[in-house]
Image (cartoon, rainbow, N blue to C red):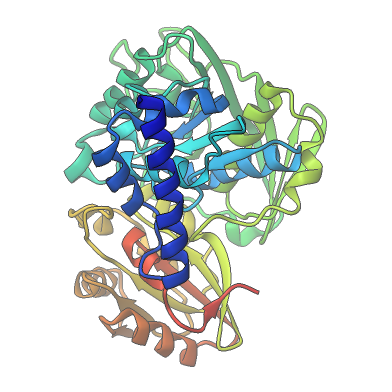
Length: 435
């Protein structure tokens, strides 16, 4: 009876999703998952036999891009993949993705599910797992997570539920590399080279972490935030990565050299190079071949270095949500483009917007046009820019009108920096489309 009910709920979920696609009443990234959880509370457990290998991606930044890269590589190899590609990563979003994508009569090869740090333990309470990739841990949404120790504890609680889990960990992040597990594999960056000097910007925001002995960590190389080759006089140091890369950064792409093979990705920024390295490391560990050939056709995930067009002008959309992630994005912004920053403070964004004062919006100095600010907290963003030394600021709270105004300002290129729920609103703007 339980199995029949699972199939019935699955059928209704697919029908409801199709209805939402036709009517465009909702993007359908979570609403169906909410209904499924109410009608079938053990839905995740019932999904387990439908998937051969289960992969999760968690961490503060880069989850959507990393899981998107993994999915793309696996699909390019001919595998069947289920992925919550639009980044809905809380429990309802994960259930939503599985409900609308699983075929109960044909076993899926892989699930690649990005998981919110706070929900990983709840997901693992029912859902089996083979791999967990952890990208990084930065301060993010302090109203939800508290300090980093709390975020780390939440992820570790999830790991503890699955003793056989294979962990793919960022060796360059001292918090991530310290996760405990029976089967740990590390990836890391060895060297970074800049082919475009404009990308070689050092951030004034630094994270300081102590070793377990209580002394501050030292660095042989520091790439950004707390990520780098760290050590302590007590003997503790960065673990040796199994998968390590020399990274060369270009204006619109990056090349990662791993074990003598060049992997070119159509993404810019060191943060994206880390995302790609994690994805490649996991796929190499799975034994996937010809990874380098599949990367050229990768299209960026929803709002993560996503390129669209509006009134004939190129629009680059870069999600921002915390100081470290925002800083890495701000380093790559074209200062001659029309710049629009949209800040919301809905639950999914984080109610606390004090992070705006820790992010280095000063990196936008030299912008050739007025900076447009929009969203629920447009005035807060304008105040932050004023204190950063900007005088030419335009406040337009309505997002549609703000996009239209920025397009009129721009010559050829527009840069939009939204928080998560603002990103969802942008996606509904008429006239904003892919190629």
